[in-house]
Length: 330
Image 1 (cartoon, rainbow, N blue to C red):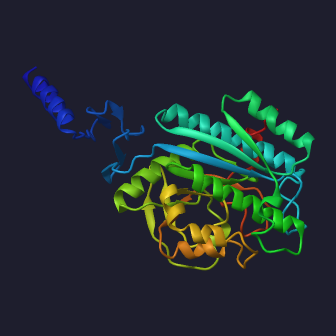
Image 2: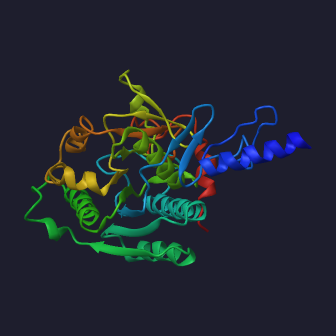
Image 3: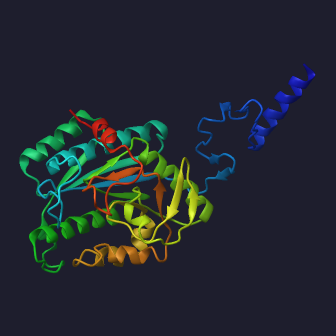
């Protein structure tokens, strides 16, 4: 009995002092009152066994999600078909549905984060806009649709060989402008042909907090583990996130998360990337990654639903069919 009393006092003192106790014999943390195979992290610290805890000095307050849609173009600048070979609108609808599910999951896990969502649509047909609005109506997420007009940038963006390319650059610039003008903390630029795992946003944000707190730096976060990352044999650094490994990367596509501070710091790069088509398309963004930390997850949290042979598409070791079926909105 005396031993139990001393143990209880020790646990209580440890809690007061902010220490956690790990009982490896019982596979239990008496201070956290959790089994060791549960999520041991909380709002103030990130805990990963056996690495211990990281004090979260960088807390996320809000996220602005900018979902860029074009339901008219099957695959920009390509004649190939996507995996499963459905019309583009089907990918847009399932992508939106997966994003909404991930938002709901984030709110369930962390209700302290302000979430704002806007769709920047590039001249979709009315019948497709109705389908998008139906998914929004069925959800409990407040989403604003902006019907973007490419003429807004006709005196800014260089004339392109096709209207599709001009429209792509214009809608992208519109997203960056909204991110710069309306973002408060994190901004997530999302293209319309990605399927997101339900836990994606929660993991991205909790890993951002952990890695940013450790490095004392703001980040770029690419949610997809692209095939091209394994094709050039470049050296990378591995980091521990909240629930999986993350690697440093030197290039992304146009789906990524970033802090508003970095948008302001590198606004010239964001802006210049949209003035003309470059090779690679993300040329000026990639220049930023030479100076700032950019990470992507292993395994992937978002899947780019392109052709199966694309080096910029499907992430390895993912059950694509299962993820596709899970996000059927009907």
